[in-house]
Amino acid sequence: MMHRSFKRQQSTLVLLAVVVVGAVLSAGRPFWIDNAIMVGIFSLMAISVGLSYGQAGILSMATAGFASLGAFGTAILSTRYNLSPWIGLLFALSAPMLFAYPLARLLTRLSPLPLSIATFLLGGLFEIAVREGGDFTGGFVGLSGIPGLPGIDDPQKMMLLVWAVVLLVSLLYANLMGSTYGLAIRTARHDPLRATADGVDVPHLLASTFSASAALAGLAGWLYAHQMSYIGPDSLTTHTSISVLLMAVIGGARALFGPILGAALLSLLTLYLPAAETQGMVYGAILLLVLLVAPDGLLGIRWRNSRPAAGNPVSAPKTMAKGEL
Image (cartoon, rainbow, N blue to C red; front, side):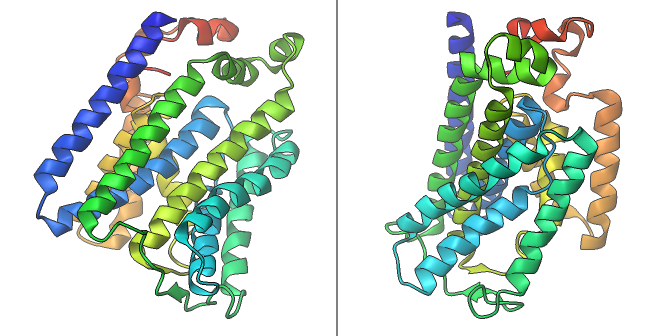
């Protein structure tokens, strides 16, 4: 246990060092500061996927929908009712979480394919609700004039705030998955009957994990809205859900840094694509290559050969190899 705790501390220090170096290199460069902010926001959404899919095995296509709920919630509260963005933060965390829990109690009974289709349809319903919301949600026009965060009066401060949130979330995520709660999540994923026999309420556990990932997506949406000062029906779509899922899978959905690495690689890659139409083709090619070379993602290459045998999935959480949570 002390060894794992030390490894988590090492990982946190590595991420902190990367953030500090990035802040120094991007100082005075607005283009890279703006991109660093967006990479941080997409990293939060990718970590949300890592928690729900990488750890609990819940393949959700509604990540952007929960982010959109948080983004529109804080936008409406701050523009329509002149409330503080910090109140919007409470809404962005609580609304997706409260919405996701009862939904997960129903959907986690399904097999992976029907579950992913159901969440894909849910994301589409979010988009329809936004477009048909009229003046309340801005309809097809969206909401503009969203105020910035109090005390964050320049992009450099916003970048530091976003990555401070990523650092904090990563630390909490690592500690969660290194605890007995995390062990219960992994056991419930690999062998629900064993988890039930051990006294774990599997439906409640999976629903709680899914609702926590939804709250994390809502947090990303909150940051997105106050960074962009605009949110519309085309801001956070099903396409965004697919993108962040690819980010998590390509980087390594079960590893702490996997979703962050995937978010950084794919976000920066889009800057150099010749046209937006090529994005899907390039993403698909990268995904295919990664799945062939490293089925567990880029950060899964190191430990792939040291994993326990497939015939003993229940013991996998107890013998997790170097680099995983």
